[in-house]
Image (cartoon, rainbow, N blue to C red; front, side):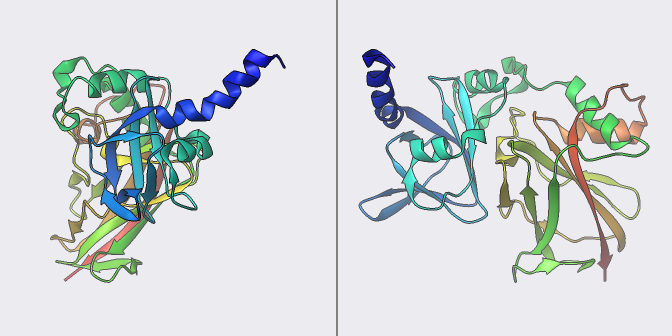
Length: 277
């Protein structure tokens, strides 16, 4: 190994520490820690690679590396470490090849106010229809090991089998795959009505619904209330490597549209919950 390469390798950690990142989304809680004081991270917060960060249990943090055109989905580390160390430890955190276009769109302005008219080309109706094709396949199989649990918001206990009308719940999502995944949950009510359980952000980024690789995330910020009609509801977890708009998928299901021949690779799990008075 020549001296120039050794010198570059020695400098690499310091380069990472000086890198600038911007918070794209937080599920649960994440903090910057300085002099023993924690300050909560929110979207658009600017971080340095050398900043110490802490991600709470069952939480996640997505950060943008504008210079490298990368987006990282991070889960809690074993200890409070610098952001650059956390990224290095979680090498599988970087989002796929379309991330550069996400970063470009996000960095045009306010993360929360991107519009579909801003040429956000990483998400389109073709992807939504491929998700639709996967859902209505005769024998749908999950492409990723993903799991859904229903949690009582008040007690924090797992709900198994039934919920009462008026009961507040949230979903716990476990992603056991080695890659970050975008998720949503389809609710099929006992009367056949279809609902998207999580709202779509204005720009279609789905960053608020991003689950890091090999992680468990509690989506507490999006609680639901068990509602009429009473009966057996189905909740279908859908997980994809690229963003999708579940509203378009639901519209296709309601209209019974012809599906494309090539379904998307999506993770799926179905939970049946009896909604009782």
